[in-house]
Structures are given as C-alpha cells and as structure tokens.
Image (cartoon, rainbow, N blue to C red; front, side):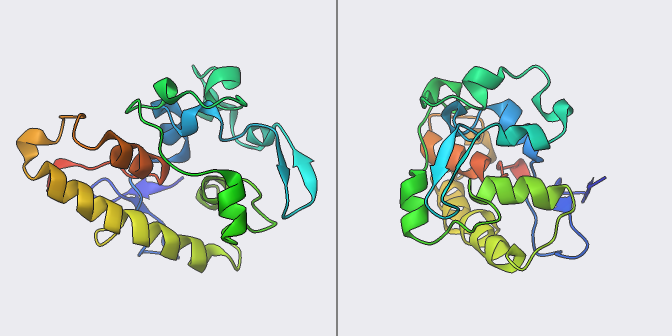
Length: 180
C-alpha cells in the first residue's frame, strides 16, 4: 500500500525523489489519454501486437470506468479527458525517440502502473528522471503552469492551459494550492 506525505505526494521509500500525487487509478478515472492508452497496438520495439494490457492491473482501478471508451478505444476522444484537451504525442513518436523499452511497450504510464504495484527494474531511474523533467517541483511543465496560473484564486480556472493540465494529469500530477 503506497502512502502519502502531508503534501499529498506519494511515498516510494526506495525513490524519495519520485513524488507524483496521483495513483494510476486516479489518472484513469479522471479521464486521460483520450481513452486510448491501453488500446490494441503493434509495437515496433517488441515486434508484437499487444491488446488487453489493462487486464494485468487490479479490477478496482477500472470500477465505474467504461473500458471500451475510456481505456482501450482505438479512437482518441479529447472529451473523455478531464480537461477536454488533447495532450501528448503518438506511440510512433515515442518509439522514434527511443523512449519506449521492451518491458513497457505502451510507455511511461504502463511503467508507472507497474512501478506503483511494486515492480522495480533497471529502467526506473530513467523513467523517474523523465517524470522529474515534466512534473517535479522543477519540471518544465509544472513550473510553466504555476507561472500561468499565478495565484491560488485562479487554480480552479481550468481555462488556463488545459493542455498542460492534461499533460500533468497523464504524468500523475495535479497542481494543489501549496504548489502556487
């Protein structure tokens, strides 16, 4: 059972620098990836077709979530996303950048789901470093959103950069009042 710090970030004792504040189930239930994250894919990395990858995770993560539209759809629907914005790039792009490893053919969020459940691998340091560059206190997108919002009064104004908010959600982080 992963616990939280008083600031709401998750505690991973073996990686104290890794401080997301959303559990995988929270990301999925909030509305992420346009409903396509665990869609059927062909991986150029593994040279295999993958489908139903979501089934390895606890059923509780998907309670009250429509699998066909919110988890495994082949068509991205930005209206499923919490902030109604499309954020991110294609699997092909991620593969071309060599950000995808064989062990996690779907990418960062698949790695995070497995890490959250206790799996540790040689890829952890790289993935945590990637997360830090996006969503840590010094992460470029988190800092950008903090600067755009400016005051706690504007924190709930979701018209302020819904794309960055969606991106951070998909990297397991949502801004809290203490971030401002």
